Length: 439
Ligand SMILES: CSC[C@H]1O[C@@H](n2cnc3c(O)ncnc32)[C@H](O)[C@@H]1O
Ligand SMILES: [Zn+2]
Image (cartoon, rainbow, N blue to C red; front, side, top):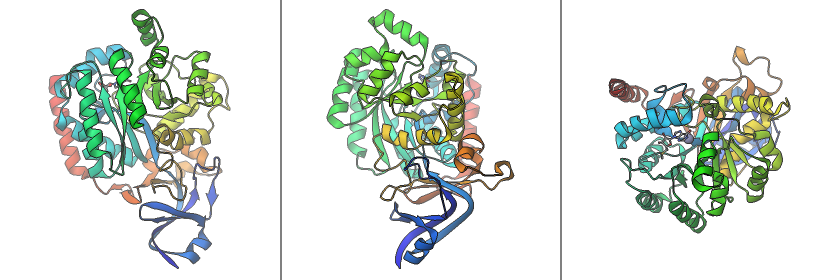
């Protein structure tokens, strides 16, 4: 008998890789933060002795969800400005509020709230883009959640930096000081083609290639962005990025609601990743990302919530469902984006886009034990013919019972283990008072 840290025996295991697999009567063995084995329960019990053995008779065990695009501190602005199109929302509401309130304390408390919400909803890894990224890194470390930290660049001055060159220098400094931390990874995060000039974008293309750091950027979010780009630069944003050396396999292009067939072929050929944010795109009426056409062309499509001021939650179960339903509506094809594909987008595809597919994204021996148990025993989930169908089309995030990152339980029976709920509520309530008074 081999002694191991943990054995988990759920009713179903959905490893995501191999595709379309649902295992029943299997156990997953965790040792030193990694998945050591995935095998029939009788064999697991004969071969391993777990320091703990968790039996989850009504649950599906899935890989931790990867939120491939968010602005975590924006939880503090949830519901502040609704029912507006992107540029009105940003220029007249969000950027003024950020100008007034964003600082280290805002980012600290907003990230903590986001981490609590994400863990309670089964998200174990988030790809962030926001001011004061080192604070996001610190909070993530304290909580134990996995984070891809956006080294942001924007041509506007903010409380974090005054110009593009300073954003880049500060970002590189953060990267140098934190690059060895096992739960952190980094992306350059130029905000959008319409807010970052050619020179900093060229520099980022060079740095991204030299340091092998992905580039995370809002691209082709609205029709307005395309019109403005043609007027200012004579080309569509994707073409401009390609000329600046940015449209290769390191690019995570977020939104992509405006795409011509030649551009889809270009993305596929270049190995560029697309991050689909269906709920934010719907709420801001930004347009529809042609997900099915991208998938058919071979583009890796991941899923993100965007920030909570344009969604207004960090619910990756909701995002999977919206993505699956919307793809059918947009393509006129009920077979578009089936449940297994939606789950893959929310897990392994996000990991691939972040360059983390060897580490997370599927329940594969050798990978980090980032996992989620979802209770399918509730009345609202009966009967269960196909657990993956339920995960995408029927369950709510409140059915997540347990969330582990690198084998560490961060949510146990719906209780957060590293975040003090009462203290967090007090902090958020004081932000609510301050922000509402200024509104
Ligand atoms: C430079 S930090 C990130 C910056 O992005 C803003 N933002 C949030 N959501 C969106 C979106 O959908 N499109 C463009 N910009 C967005 C956020 O408020 C921060 O200022
Ligand atoms: Zn965004």
